[in-house]
Figure 1 (spheres, rainbow, N blue to C red):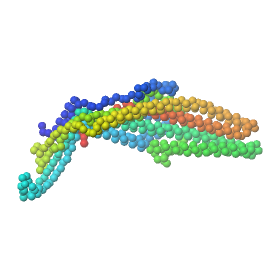
Figure 2: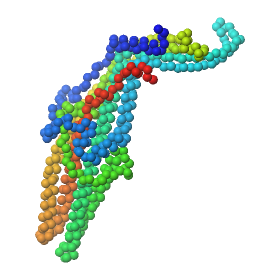
Figure 3: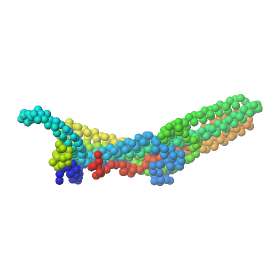
Figure 4: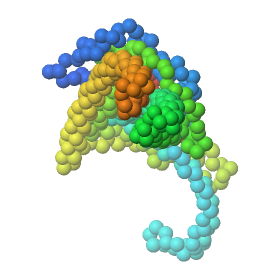
Length: 499
């Protein structure tokens, strides 16, 4: 069998398979770190979970968690965000970059073959020097056609290349988790802005209704003043209250416009061309399926990303340890075909080759390898601490969400009673004023109290909706860490012939 580049590649592949069966991988075997230190046990349940046990964890919609709210307009806006948000597009591009880099790492498992064809026509001088100092007076002209091939392959005896592949795949999975987290953060921000905007719509409705009522009251006071029953102070007080209410309406509209512009940016639309018709918030928050604290580790993409960074750091420790061992490589820097005539370039006599092997063994490096290993181990320890901190942060965010919803739910109940009481107070104040028992300042105070209580009731409803959104976000939005199993690049036989 002639040692053509094709046959050389087959030989290298066979040798690499034999070495892979007998080789070892230096460095620590990866084990997922405990989410907490030994002295801090994993919490068994949430403090605020008592009212959350009605719904099982598997009822959370996978991916499109916002469907829990049953709001068609929100669903439409979220679809626009997934398609048009440029930050999310950039995150997906980063993911594709990480996938390509993982393929680059797997390329080291295969022989590297390159060719450098050349065609030269040269003329030799007649007075050129020859061996022994003799000269010739006969110039010559000739062609030189060469198709050389270079073959290089590192036998991964101690797992240096394989550790690089593990590191690249772990980085790919970390980037995939980062992409999922970016989507979760953006969709949650959109939902929070959307419900805040609807809350402001409801506040606008409340303020407009009160301003309409106050205009009627001003007309009544003016008529009473014209009839000599009311004095000018009553008119001035009612006019002042109406003007203050109209000021509140302008401020609410300003806040609504800002949230509308923020939503436009999130969905990838130009703010001047984007508009949402006012729809007062009237829904109630859905009951959230919470699950157990231990399940949170598999549902938060940011936690999964931090854990995958631990795997990256672990592989880097293996790479640093592999630097202490020899590197064996097979190379062919002279092989191919060469001829003076292109017609005979592919003939057997035109074939030339040279194959060699290298063994690069570290002896003295001034402590470089030892220092690199120490740095890799320190980076691993830092990544474990970062992972545990992300777990603690997640626990805190869920508890914040549960306690907020609990407090806001109780506050909404008492505030609803406060609104009813304020309406009754205004009715009584009007009756006492018309009956001449109290002055008009009592009516003004009752009108102001009713408006404040109605606005606060609407604000509490909006805060409950937003708190529910952030609780969904804290719980991972239905994401599952098992999705990362598909995010890895495996070497394939087809890579042998890929450029």
